[in-house]
Amino acid sequence: MTSHERFITFCGGLTGILVLAAIPASSPAVTAQPDDPAGWFRATTQTLMDAVTDGDKAVWDRLLDKDCIITTEDGEVLRKARFLEELKPLPRGFSGKITVRDLTVRQLDSVAVVHYWLDELEQIFDQELKTIYVETDVYQRSGAAWQAVAMQVTVVPRDLEAIPQRSTDWQELVGDYQYSATATSHYRVFMRDGALYGGRDVKTATRLIPLAPLVFFQQGSIHIMIFVRNDAGGIEEVRELHKYNEVRMKRAATPAR
Image (cartoon, rainbow, N blue to C red):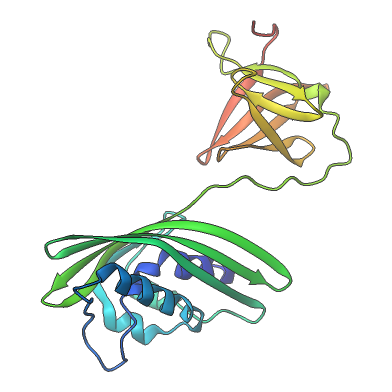
């Protein structure tokens, strides 16, 4: 795990752990205020978000349930020991801040489900990264004390920024593409106001945001579209990177009507 990945994991994916930690170091229990549990969770979470880059293992070791399951935004599942092993302060040149917002708490007897959003601003030397996460954590109460038993975080998708290209003449990409010769639906690529668009039809198509001469991000999705040349240099297919899979669509000989 790289330093950047560690920052993302422990600032975003483990916010639920941080919620449990805003108590004096000598205290063995975590007690929410019965009159305003959401306010307590919100304030506690934000306080610890401000200090997470210190890599304070003692707090986590004291307050995590021994069998807590942590699922990161990359789909990695961590147990308490693994989390403590990897938690370290950020290296030189790295800094960041996370703002907790829209936190809600639903209490079901001895269980609390905490849901919230995270606005992350990260500085990597002279580069600035902005990411939004949404997280749901589950706590179990024993008496007045709460412990985290499970937490899961997801990155909220957003459109990638266009990378300037030497040429924006994508006329050679224009056409219809299909999953197979018997497919009833086509993926139509066309130009509109100097920009490239793609979709099932002209009305619902969205912009293809350029990342490289033949690589585009499909606006409003999580998909990257890659146009592929044949041995003669012509465009023969487009590949959609779809949830870590490649879906191929061959160029149709006859445009769809």
